[in-house]
Structure formats: structure tokens, C-alpha cells
Image 1 (cartoon, rainbow, N blue to C red):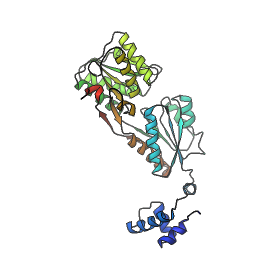
Image 2 (cartoon, rainbow, N blue to C red; image 1 turned 120 degrees about the horizontal axis):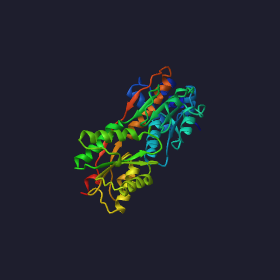
Image 3 (tube, helix red, strand yellow; image 1 turned 90 degrees about the vertical axis):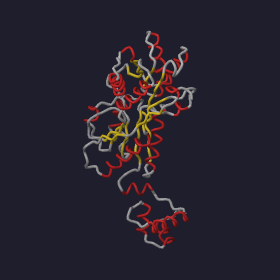
Length: 337
């Protein structure tokens, strides 16, 4: 038998309104009253009807998260963090996979699921500002990642240029002077990678070192195989770096495999730094030094921003929200202790 608010109110000896205030986490309830009602809830096993609650607000209680690659550990970990953050607000997350293709990103951003979801969190790779300027969907949108659009949508990212500079400065501090960058995309100049590439160049310039194009490895994607191919091409061309800063951990892991096959020891011959702090980098034969974005903070900011837009639809200006990052030093630059 389903337990109602009335049942809880009778057990606690309070009004139905008081029970509703506790269930909906209203602030103006005394700790003693909250504890009294919570005890009745626990004893009766009451579960709120979230569907009815959302419908009373004209919502479905569902938001969508669209990412380029569910198979990429970074996006998988980020998705988990978003789901956890949304659950704190009794919101369900619907996952979508765009494959990083502009057509799919446009389709998602234009609200083809508008009747199903209350809002969308989108991490685009190819989407252009012009694709969003004509957006006629009133479903709130929050953007994640490195792309900058200067549009009235909240955008959440870390400072990629500063993070890349931190990675390269770490390598410089370890005495490395021929630092390569792996991860410039071959199919477009206007990609997220350009910010990390800019950070690489800035750090080398500050140190009075050249940043030749021969030390930039282009990739067709950002997976392990892409990193391996880029590293092999660079070595085959005669370029011998003493360190590598990779666009992400997957590229770095692919590069380290090729270095091992060529008889180059990490970090003694070539030090390596990645980006994303995925679990795979923590458990390899050589653990990976990496830039670790605060995924939980990104997820929390994304969900909070979306809910804020739902509560205040009249707000039209976009906000730039920045999450923290940190450099985690491991064996790929420090060696085994």
C-alpha cells in the first residue's frame, strides 16, 4: 500500500503542509520538526512521487547530457558525475552520444527531444556559434568544454591555456627542453586543441625556447591509436623530443606505447604528461602525470546552471563559469620511487 503525506503527518502529529515542507527541503523548518517528520518518513517507508512533483512545475524531471564519445573514459567519468549531481536534485539524466559530429550536435542543440527533457547539457566539438544563433528552442542549454561561443548560454570549462602551461612548466622544471605537443587536429584549425597548443607555445616562449612545428604532432582523433601514430611519425621524421605533452591521457598512453617499442624509456629518455586524469593512467606499468580537471565541480556547476535557468527563464545573458584543475605528478615524469 502506498504511503501518503497524510499518513506521515498523522504518524508525526503535524500538518500535511509541514510534511510537504520537509519533503521539499524548504529552509524554514526547525531542526527538531525536521527530525520528527523524517523519523515518521523512515518508519513508514514513505517515498515522494517525483513524477507528480515535477509535473506540478510543468517539468518532466529529466535533463539530457550529450557528449562526443561515451567510450572515452573522460566523458564516461564526467557523465557519472553529472548523474550523481542531478540525483541530488531528484532529476534523471538522459545520455546522448553525438560522435563529435556537427550534424548530430546541431540536431541535439535544436531540441529534437524538447517534449521529453527540461534542459540540455552539451559538450560540443564541431558545433559553431552560427548553429546556436538560430536556435529557436526554449529548452535551457548549458555548454561544456573548450569551445567558446560568446552567446547567451552558460559555459563551463577549465582554463585550458593555463592548465597546458602548468603541464609544460612542470616538464621544464624537470630539465626538459625539447618538449613536443601531440594532439593538434588534422581536419580543422578551430578545435578545442588550439587552447592547449597555445598554452604549450606560451610556456616554451616564456622559457626562451623555440616551439617549432616539427615538434607538433597532428592527429586525426584523440584516442590511443592516434597518439601512437603521431608519436611514430615524429620519431620517424628524425625529431627526438625529450618530453611530450599530450592533448589527453589517451593520446599520451598511445605515445608511451610507441616510445617503449622504440626502446625509449619513460621518463628517463622521454617524459610524458597527459590531460584528463582518467583511471587508466593511474594503473599502467608507468603511471601517467596528468592535468586533472575537477570533474565533480564541472558536473555540479552544469546541473546547477541548468536548474537556475529553469527557475529564471527571463535571464538571457550567458555566464562563463570556470572549474578548477590540478597537476598530478606521477612516474611518467618523476620516475619510479
